[in-house]
Image (cartoon, rainbow, N blue to C red; front, side, top):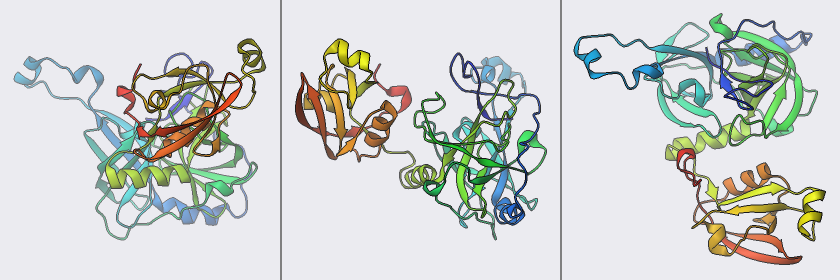
Amino acid sequence: MVLAAVKPGWLYGPQRAVLLTPPFSAASAAAPHPGFALAARRAAPAVVAVTASKPPPQQRGREPWSRLFGVPDVLQQGLGSGVIVSGEGYLLTNSHVVAGATDIEVQLADGRQARARLVGLDPESDLAVLKIELDRLPVIAFGNAENLQVGDAVLAIGNPFNVGQTVTSGIVSALGRNQLGINTFENFIQTDAAINPGNSGGALVDAEGNLVGINTAIFSRGGGSLGIGFAIPTGTARQVMAELLAHGRVQRGWIGVQTRELTPELVEMLDLGTQEGLLVSRVVDGSPAEAAGMRPGDVLQRVAGQAVHKPPELLAVVSRLKPGSTANAGLVRAGKPIELHLRVAQRPPPDQEPD
């Protein structure tokens, strides 16, 4: 069963996220809202169980003689969830649920089953789009995650531990969570609705049953729910889905800098002359930033007219820029303001980013 989980010593190794098969954990104790039954009836039919069959790691380089003598392949099955977002059969789920799968099966809440085709995936946001060929599909209604407020009621719907479709309730605990080390691009909705292994790729819906997030990760000491779960907002999910449908991959802008958040100590030690912006710690050779004249030690304050104060803000602003476009960058160097003109490049895949 698949769920990205984070816990003290954020799994995936120290301080990172991992995929777990942990023991069962109790659902959230949040009291049900009288209107939740209607919300669940509206949303639940569009939430599906996803089974992804993958070769185990040791078999991906198995010896030729094992095939010669008919040693059978043994596939691992990852269990997750997905959400039908289109009457044409398109589904959203998590990238980590289906990455590397040789066969993907989907089971609807009404019992129907279908083989799914992988349209595309984006590991940096942990989103994937699947396609199934069935008629009369239930389709979830999109909500606007930007309208959410801390304290709003939400439901998490999915297939935890493969026990069958399950609905849990909670509230929005926080918005805009980032720098958790789960994905490259993070802007999570945090919720205390119980999310467990098998819920990955399932729906987070509001009290009206509208989709506001795709459940993706939990903070956990043993893999089960501790009331700290994370969902990708629908705004991000819709943007990624549109890119995957149009291009088969997500096209993002890139300028080739690494930055550090400014602290009073850094400002004083380096005599930067400003406390607003980000300290440029590295400029990648051959990057748009180098071509424009940016240097380590510059304080980057604005890109494309948007102020940046934290590295995730800069990453988000730059990623939204169209490759091939130009953007202005406002910075401070030796106490003096400077304006540079950047020719935005295509963000390289994660495995091809310059060291």
